[in-house]
Length: 243
Ligand code: APR
Ligand code: ZN
Picture 1: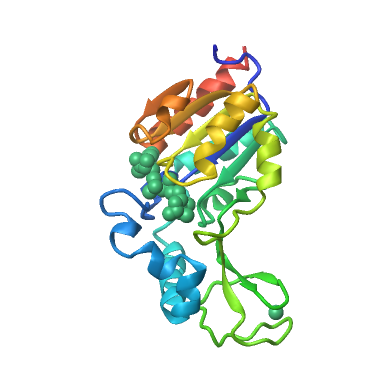
Picture 2: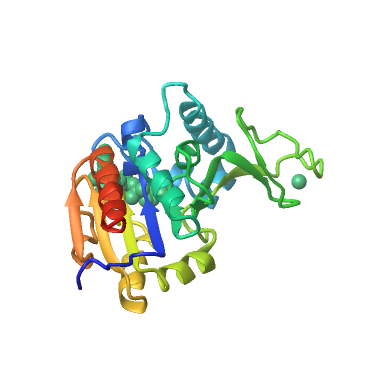
């Protein structure tokens, strides 16, 4: 399959690699998050039931890291916003990341399938609200008043990712699927390329520092830093379609 003349609608999937050059750790690189702490201790419902303080502390630390003034969107985040601006309503950004760097880089309607680090959810009333400070297990819900029901609005291992219907529809109706900065280790995101290619008609391309677990499933792979690959790819796309 050749690169499509008319690639829209486009679905972009991003992972931790797109935020690495903004100073946020990835998960499975050498110095990644899972080399310092175990998933079973901080990122499962069982961990939260067993030791809620430990889980809260893990996300409080990451929330404070994201709010560090030194952390800001990079050229890859901004390039995707530029693509959305050039083709309004035709570019869906789906991210596995819980940071807000896509939004701060100008992207619109970002689909956070693993939730958002700067939001908390009440398990009693379902309220989801922005939260920028430390969260403790005793933080009361200001909507329903319950205590002990607040948790980070983040999808843990063993929980259902968010917005899957919307994502699956988009994957099976897009002309181009671009995967950026993800190792292809975690489903369902790791299966998106097959859904776009086999159930849809999409041309599929991977932009990543190195071949991911699923790189053989893509029509095309380009390897390097996201801040080099993504702006160049967006320029190429826009040039192709300007002619
Ligand atoms: N530019 C491009 N790609 C990069 C860069 C960079 N500067 N730095 C790292 N990468 C690539 C790595 O080569 C790796 O393939 O980004 C990928 C990051 O992979 P992971 O650390 O596994 O992160 P991700 O794929 O987003 O993990 C998926 O797993 O732990 C869960 O919920 C968590 O959302 C996360 C999910
Ligand atoms: Zn509540």
